[in-house]
Amino acid sequence: MSEPVTIRFEDCDLDAIAAAAGRVCVLVPDEGNLGQEARRVNRLTRGAIARMREAEDGLKTGDLRTLAWPAGMAARAVDVVVLPRRCSVDEARKAGATLAMQRGREPMLVLAGNHPKAAEIAMGLALRDYGFDDHKTAKTPEDGRAVRMMVSKSAEIEAAAAPLLAVAQGVFFTRDLVNEPANVLTTTEFAARLEAMRGIGLEVEVLEEGALAELGMGALLSVGEGSDSPSKVVVMQWNGGDRDAAPLALVGKGVVFDTGGISLKPAAGMEDMTMDMGGAGVVAGAMRALALRKARANVVGLVGLVENMPSGRATRPGDVVTSMKGDTIEVINTDAEGRLVLCDVMHYAQERFRPAAMVDLATLTGAIIIGLGHENAGVFSNDEQFCNQFLRAASAEGEGAWRMPLGRAYADQLKSRIADLKNTGGRPAGSVTAAEFLHRFVQEGVPWIHLDIAGVASVKTDTAFAPKGATGWGVMALNRLVADQFEAAE
Image (cartoon, rainbow, N blue to C red; front, side, top):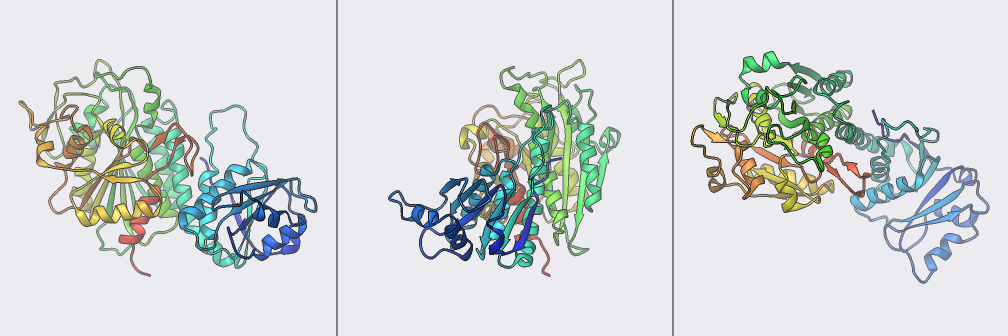
């Protein structure tokens, strides 16, 4: 399992800067006086930083300039990052991410001094310092993984950074799960990795196929009929709040591989369907983050783990299945399988836990990518206040999210001639009708959000905080939502 780089916080020692090996990173404001650490580096480099600031092309927030093999220092390079003291959280994290991309595998000393957002700089560095090479035979040596941050009050900054770095661990856990190939991350292996989180204080329960059949989860079980991998539901509980407080329920789609079933997908690009368990991956990462930072809230995470394969046992287009709720569903397209998984797990979550609110996450539709690209997840909700709370949390964490509509006309597209509803309403408004399908399984009075993360769970190009591949989108937003709305006061 990938772990964020170790970041050690230490008090300022100006005399130690000259002897630091590897890379030395110094923060300078775009204007105004240099801090004491920057002044020391400027003196050691015979005024190089001052000349850099006075150059005609100047320096602006976010810029990075490198001095290679600086005279007067043992470091191989000095990286100068422009960051005002009154910067935003996003700017501070991006500065940290910029440093992570410079570091490689060398030791690094970051001279953050008394910068008020030193903890956020550390968070950005940790988030971007990620690579998934579990299946490469040429391993990158781990020497020099530690980063030292020289700050004015190391104990205070370390305490401020601790919950942020716990969230980074949750993000890494999600990325690892989403990046993992399907022959490794089977439903059984996925469940085992979640069971291992008992070691950090989560209560974890695995419901096997027999139990799911007894519960009446005919919709979920229909998806996995064609696979040799057993379908499962994993329940993770974190009880850090008041004993009697109803939990927030997080529900994730965990299709470990999606061929489309009998409605077979085209071969081109099917290899990307290893990420169709992205919703379950985010739920798992969020639960890990909450446990590691010991959130003062009650949260339950439930994931439905299945594999959608074609075989002689597979569900056919035109079949009718019965959900746990009791609604009958005409399966028009076996590639619209995620909603069949989610509807049963959502119903189970509400019946068992009576949650204060519920969020489901899924790489549900290609239509959301057509609508929003890879910049925003689609947000659907039955509750204005709850939706706005999530949108604020996502915005605060720099995770793109855009509200989409719901409505009776969209739900009417799901009417079936032979069953209570169909599992797809056709091409028009495909992401909206998928959300309306799930909306049917939300009980009266339960605030609910559906997040369609098909466009943001895994991407083909680098982002500010992750290399191409799995992003871990949603872990930080859900953690912020819990912190802002569901945590008990100290």
